[in-house]
Amino acid sequence: MNILLQRIIDKIVHTGTLTVTGPNGATRTFGDGTGTKTHVVIHTRRAERAIALHPSLAIPEAFMEQELDFVEGDVLSFLHLIYQNMGISWTDSNWGKLLNTARLAFRPLQQFNTHRRSRKNVEHHYDLSGELYKLFLDDDMQYSCAYFERPDMSLEEAQLAKKRHIAAKLRIKPGQTVLDIGCGWGGLSLYIAKAFETDVLGVTLSHEQHQVATERAQAEGLDRHVHFEIRDYRDLSERFDRIVSVGMFEHVGITQYQTFFDKCATLLKPDGVMLLHTIGRTAPPTTTNAFIRKHIFPGGYIPALSEIMPAIEKSGLAITDVEILRLHYAETLKHWRERFLANREKVKEIYDERFCRMWEFYLSGSEASFRWQDLVNFQIQLTRRNDALPITRDYMSKCEKALEMHEKAHSPDAPAKKPAAKPTAKRRVSGGK
Image (cartoon, rainbow, N blue to C red; front, side, top):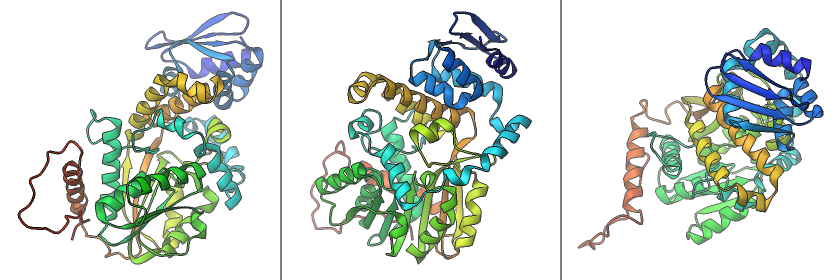
């Protein structure tokens, strides 16, 4: 085995059992022999050298190219073992802090997301085949962190609970206008329009998502109230009562944070409310994982809360509520990973073996980061006026309960109601008085 790689593994792995077979057939076991056993086989010397020099990029790339395999355990168990030994953040060690400082110097270049570059980055990931996403997402095509009110929830139930949770924080009233920045395949926009009888504009840079969302609005008879456009948020000029952005802020780029919140402040009406739902980290600022940046989300970045707050404060927006969702995304990714692997052969028919391996590492690595490292989700509620919302959070839970009752009443499985003796006004869900 490569001497440098052997020394690196020796220094990292103290707990657990990691067996590594090198390209020459020699096998060595690291750790104390406890816990789940993981056995990695490195097939080529090229991969062995690359892993020693840049493991966070070379390990997933070697797996993609079939130069590395797991003969015992899998990607998730391997990462669990590594993170168990490294701690919650790789920057905790002195060497990690030094390396992180050096990488931070180059971060602005990686995050320089102009209009053209932003569109290209979005197309790289979100304009993949729609059939791919249908194989592992829920029925509503929610591609962001679900909300597990109960541990036994299905993915579909948890994603519906997520939409309720977000809508309740927006305190929407019938007849208001809503902007959905980064609307995905349109699920949240359609949900809000139906539940609150509002007009919603959803914007995206993905042609694939725009087409699907538009078709959904037409199929559900909501195209007069929900409109989807391919537009950059920086090009908007209308004003809205409510703004919501779910899973888009990760693609803004740290050099554009001030631009993002300044624009949101101008788009939000004086008594408006905004809800930002984004992946975040509990550890200090760092850089995007090299594998994720190169192969999955070019231009993407997961911020610390300390990087978001200054831009909000300078924009004139007021922070009225912050919630940290812990482990919810780990559970979401577990569902996605299991569904993806169950449909692996179908994915291979759409793309190829290399793509399957790349996405297996992406989904497993993401789950591991939310489960055993420093990744969480932030939900940040913003207003322009300090009195735009009630001074207690009771209205949120009341609205969530009302929405849940509304969903059950309109479910296809709901018992048929007897016709009313007299015509009654259509019941609306309100965000609270």
